[in-house]
Amino acid sequence: MLQLMIVVAVAFLLQIVLSMAQMKHFSNEFVKLRRQGKVACGRKAGGFRAGAIVMFLIDDNGIIKAARKLEGVTILARVKDLDGFEGRNIRDLSEADAPKHHKNLGRAIADASLSYRKFTAGEVIPEPPSPFKKVGNSIGGMIRTKVKA
Image (cartoon, rainbow, N blue to C red; front, side):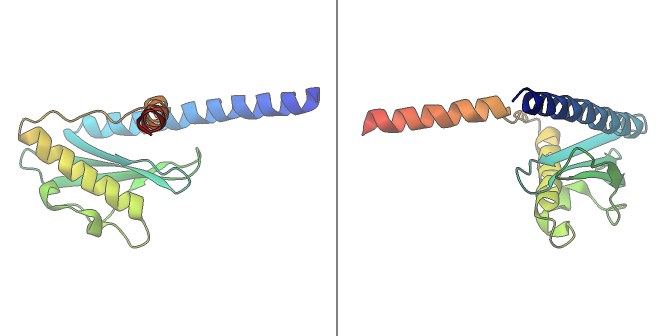
């Protein structure tokens, strides 16, 4: 039993260390783009599917100068170039612009476009709920449903 607890603890610590390394890598890549100009980001959590984050380096008119993506299921995913978007206007992007079989990448691209349009219109871009908030909302919804019944 003690050996199992030690294995679980080591796996948990390894996951924390690798997650921190991935966050640092993403942060460094974002800073590199940000030093070159404005950056629009979009994200879509994956759950059991590959999640995706996209970053578009844009000029003052919304024209994309560079595109990067972080896509994957594991903490071993790294930021890579996202080809085919240079010279396009970020306002015109949609889910259909992603490569086939990359649904969450398409949703992240659409999210970046929507966020940019909201930002330029002066709207507030809401923060997505944290995982703990999502669980709390689900539990709250179940409790309210039982109370009504």
